[in-house]
Amino acid sequence: MPSIEDMRRNLQDLAALPADRSFGLPGHFYTDPTFFDWECATVLRDGWHCLGRVDEVPEPGDYFTVQLLNEPLLVVRGDDREIRVLANLCLHRGMPLAEGRGNVKRFVCSYHAWSYARDGALLRAPRMENAGFDAAACRLHGFPVQVWRGFIYASLNPVAAPFGTEAQALDNLLAPYETETFRLVHHAQEVWRTNWKCLVENFMEGYHLSVVHPQTLHGYTPTGLAKKSASGPGFTSYHANYPVDIPSRGNGAPGLSDAERQRSTLFARFPAQVASQAASLMVSLMIFPRSVNEIQVKWTMSVYGDDLDADTVAQRIALWDEVNREDREKLERMQVSLGSHHARSGPLAGDDYEGTIRDFLLWLAHDDMTRDHGVSAA
Ligand code: FES
Ligand SMILES: [Fe+2]
View 1 (cartoon, protein in one colour):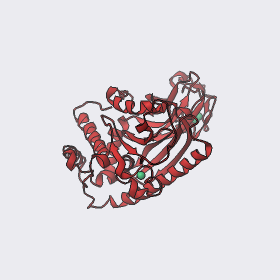
View 2: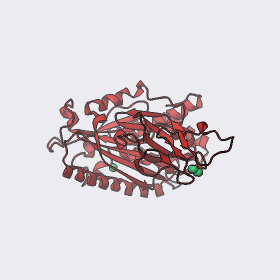
View 3: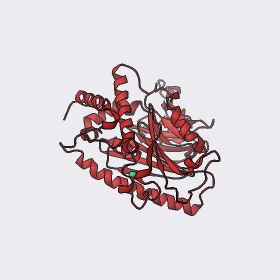
View 4: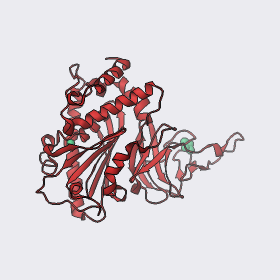
């Protein structure tokens, strides 16, 4: 295996290639556990990770849990209605405080019954009467949180710089859809045997749509109509345009143009969120790397107002289940072959088809370079 330094140089060399002759990452970037450790300590630890939607926790005390790298997290809405992301482990002996999702007045540890308020403050620690015990010092660790257009993000880096104006173009792209008003109708979690970058790249390129999804997606979003859209520091996007002669799939927000109603906008917020925004339907995949060749995928589906009736929503959930299954089957097989000594850097298709993969690679390379210069990359 090449050293990390070799791989970082290779990444910079690939990023320096001109757009019309760009290449993807070689196989070992997706299979080498040492490189994965490097990513965990750098780009993944420092990045902002989408954890879910704000309407997963609409009321005070609503919570859900998620595992981000080696950190078990508790996403909870407090009595003040703020959403917090707390370390999901008891400060006594380290027991997880909650699992799954639900609503609580307080979190009571299942081991020795310490209890915590919904903002992470310790309320009660039975029989802890030793003089040296400082209850006030026992508060669950809180991680930095941001909410953007109804998505909840957290970072493991305590001094992560908040989203800046650099992603204004992405925000502009979503503004007409009123993404923040979309209503959650489905969430699910799956474990896929693939590297996290493979799913980011797969979701973000339109090149495979007609080949891998002939029954599920090709009719609405054929490869031939894919068009690269805005990209910038920390994100990329493309439009999966619908053929002109297909029926509308819901009107969505009043400010949408006809063109916006006739396409899905697929975007990635790096490192590990990918999503598809259409007029009436929005699907987001949140990728939680578990090891170099395994991810937890949490995906959510949200809808605009009452545009879609219950039957249509059920059909869309079934459709996306099938689309995800089709991608997963490909990626799990590819994960095995990417371990080959011969899995070299492959040539990418043009901008409209795989320019988004190049954007992701450029972002990884840029993040790595700024790190070299001692600048913290957001
Ligand atoms: S580990 Fe939580 S109360 Fe002991
Ligand atoms: Fe796909």
